[in-house]
Image (cartoon, rainbow, N blue to C red):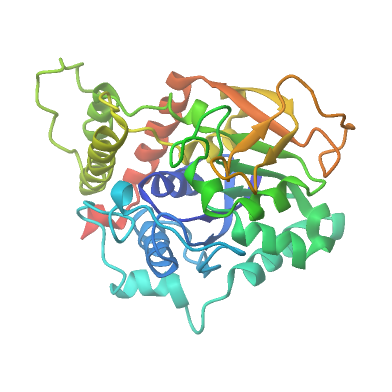
Length: 355
């Protein structure tokens, strides 16, 4: 069993990461913190709560609101991809004003802030070595994670590894050189990369292969359906949950088609973080030194992956070491088998199917 804390900025693909975190059989989700990124911190906070409710997460799991802006840079969002509220175009997901969603935001009182929530969860799980280590997963800008490792260095021994979706090897998606999550707060990412704990980077080189094709979407909507041709209409959704997920993926697909020319479907970037935790054998990885360009006029936010070992490093995971396992390849069919299995598990318990 893997114990996971998820830090995210929902975001359509973050929503799928939450679904997997709740329903992967070998993952125990301890909690969720939210951060600025795909939308404002208020919206990402609300969206995480909406997802926890819709995916029937354990009732004790609350959303812990985190950083509203990067460490030193100007805040940026991505409405072109995710809509103004971060979950544009999604139908059937209750609004943040729904009492059941509100319960995920505040519970019985004031919400627990991100750093406090992470510290409590890791401390209680680790128990100074008597318990289990926690995997910290990031699917958004790494501001909360950087603050946590700076404020609570005594809890680093309780962290198994940091798994993050972000960066690219020789490519970007929100500048010529930089991927969005890293571009939002490059200084925060560098702080985390320098921490002497194992890190796994899932870059866009790999996430761009996890495409929700029409064949995948058909099975999402109606499990067991016969394959359909490109010209045939999609089947009717077998449940309200599946319909909601289809609208989420449909909006994301339209965004990626218009912005990046993806014609076969959208990539599920963030879900791959949880997939790695659940089934690392789905990934081919190689260890490298990774740093972030902080000052380049044209390259700020670029992840500089030292694939040819130019830099002299030691064997540590920290400031002077080969600090990152970088994913290079994904078993795409295996990933979507896991994804559809988690949807099937969720389908049995989602309150969206019992309204």
